Image (tube, rainbow, N blue to C red):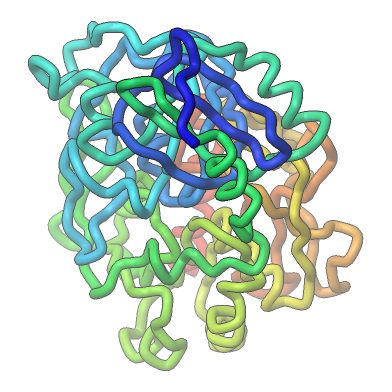
Amino acid sequence: MAEVIEGATGVLVLADGTVFSGIGVGYVGEAVGEVCFNTAMTGYQEILTDPSYMAQIVTFTFPHIGNTGVNLQDVEQFGREGGPVGLGGGARTTARGAVFRDVPTQAANWRAGSGTTGELGAWMKARGVVGLAGLDTRRLTKRIREQGMPHAVIAHASDGRFDLDALIAQARAWSGLVGLDLASEATTLQSFTFDEGLWSWPEGYAKPRPEPRFEVAVLDYGIKRNILRALTSIGARATVLPASTTAEEVLARNPDGVLLSNGPGDPSATGDYAVPEIRKLVDSGKPVFGICLGHQMLSLALGAKTIKMDQGHHGANHPVKDLDTGKVEIVSMNHGFTVDRDGLPDAVQETHVSLFDGTNAGIRLKGRPVFSVQHHPEASPGPTDSLYLFDRFGALMAG
């Protein structure tokens, strides 16, 4: 039976019955997912449009979110047909909900759209993203740190009426991310070529070279737009292919290299169909570069294992050490599964490690042009600490 929570128009209801109440933001409705926390101080639009957050509810630990507004350029996802996604639409394949300490403020940034089109709340409403503000996000973050990422329902009702028992039951009934292949829902349904480079002031996004140096086949498990921009900026022409594309179909294009993209869900579940094809790509001798989910599935293809993390890594301030150079990079992370570093095969060398908890953050296959990283080198929170990885990929293709 629906009941009114005094002064609240939004709730976050955890599967254990815990209820957080506050002010509803964005889409009026409800969404079920796994609750994680993100420690980034900026980049919230990129976070909420990253397909790797599919089926998750993101809690922002930084209190002031929304004051720089939203714009068309910082949307990271693509449509299922390979085209751009506007200010509205697309939330089904990205984050389902967002939790804020403070109600998002009015946009004040020259890159934000005019009127309500550049406001975070209006943008979330148009996309179908349920938001909740005005609660103690420190308490929620501490709960996640101590007990893991819970299943929950986030709900926004203008009249403040919520059936809490039904929401608790819905959260408990959700199966969770383990065993869930989400890449098949996030991937493009048809191939397309991308030709936009990295952004720089004041020119904006770079134009592609007239004649590309490399042809790169990108297997799309939930690709971020900026990964493709980074590829274009090293002289590559990136052709994005559906996640179900076979190795034979990839190699028939005779690419100079293959990139395995980021994406959502359980790598073992997506690996049921992707890992055998990745093994064939490795055996072909082509340079292979994996990022995030692509890193995890490449690791599976090479004989390693992946495990579910309690809190995961979500943020733009994660220190990662390059074991070859000793350099410490500040990187962006977004993953709830990790490669088991204790079970790496002899042929696999660990190249990067998280300085937060010692988990694996990168590998290479000894004697082969094959490597991958867990973090997002295109996200540039350092700001450009990890862009060299794309140059490394280019050098392998050139060699």
